[in-house]
Length: 390
Ligand code: FES
Ligand SMILES: [Fe+2]
Image (cartoon, rainbow, N blue to C red; front, side):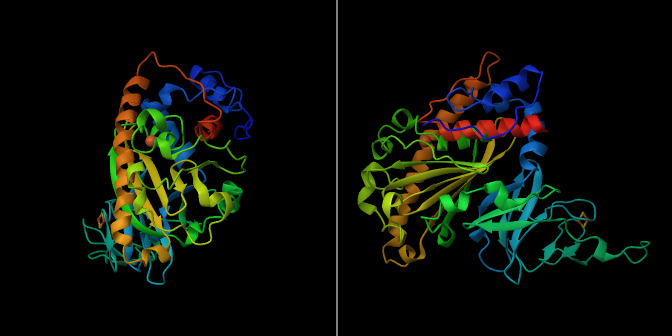
């Protein structure tokens, strides 16, 4: 089945790079892969910041990464340092991690706090963003603390994923993600609980990391002894509306465990029926979050640029609360974490190797396998559209 590219008018372009980008917007069977410059060129990265990361909504992970009031995490999205926290009323908020005095970063890492205190001169903010403390400002003309609250960004939650919008035009999130929620309705994704979140850095472009998670093509060659036999060839990609791509595939056993560890399988997610109970749905929420909805667990990766040839990756794993209540949950969940890390240990060298090849001045755009790489192709079309529209 031919899968249409992201519908968008292909702009009239003249530079060789933009012409190469425009060729990514064709239907999958005809499209080129992204131009190699998109994976290593600092100028492309500069172009991505406003067109990819500061337009529309971004999913920045599971909303329960900040579970209790006062919990916070920090992150940097394409050079924008952010704080995500849960305030005392239980609402999730996102702020620029930049002090309103003279710009210092306010928080680092993650933790729990009552107030946000700047480490430089101790301006202090409530978890709702208001400036409440800061000494020696009495003689400063017309200084009103009410004018110097943290810069706040809108947040929304869909299917348990937290979305943040750095775009001042703030488009409608539901319009942006189209039929994403109904496509994933068979899985109670919004009810799943985050049990593991870890960060790593990979020496590859952020897009390449997300791409390898979204294609079945490499499985027999990169994961021959660990995972490949679990995965049947995938179903054709589902036609979707919205800025995402998804592909379902039947698995022999659970895709959440290594082939050799299937005896540790945890129960299926309550309520899963039909085809959802027999495989894994791989989904990419553009631009930066991807996940696998399995029969027993959800595993999620976010990737953010950390330079053109390096990315910061967050791995999240979630289970149903019924499963977490089982006495052997911790021991069995550990086997799922081992599987996730084992897959990474095989994917990362492949990505580093790809990065070295694609950075060559002689690298050229390639083509896609319609069955094995439709998610990658749909992303390329979406990404090209964003860059060309900017
Ligand atoms: S920069 Fe934060 S208090 Fe001065
Ligand atoms: Fe892989």
